[in-house]
Amino acid sequence: MPILEISALRPTTPVNVPAALSKINLAIAKAYGCDPRHCWATVTWLEPGHYAEGDLPANTQPADTHPPIARLTCFEGKSAAEIEAVLLAASHALSEAFALCDNVFITYVEAKSGAVVAENEVVRT
Image 1 (tube, rainbow, N blue to C red):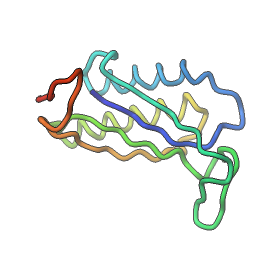
Image 2: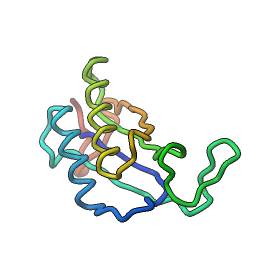
Image 3: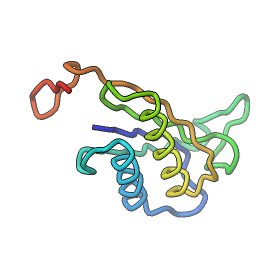
Image 4: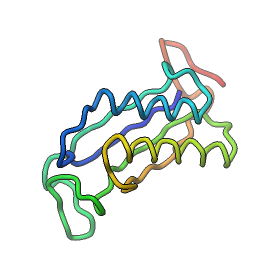
């Protein structure tokens, strides 16, 4: 159930977003060890000037500042090495898909067993 939520400035060059998100999902699913249908990704574009790094706002995605801010939510129970592997897979795929030159920031959040609802049922791992 990995879910990657991305908030970012619009890229300066066009990106095929559906293809990019599919590529990211496939990489995360492979590293996480799940069916790609159970891996979701979204992107929310930030308005120009609505993201500042320090005292520097930006209008479009710079190459070396203002990294996309992403949150990767996964079920609890993965080891530190497994978490690192899925984070790196997500980071590399996101960086490549959106041409970010490794300018990515992702946090890993654990969803607790019994604290998630899907299809009107509480999900337990």
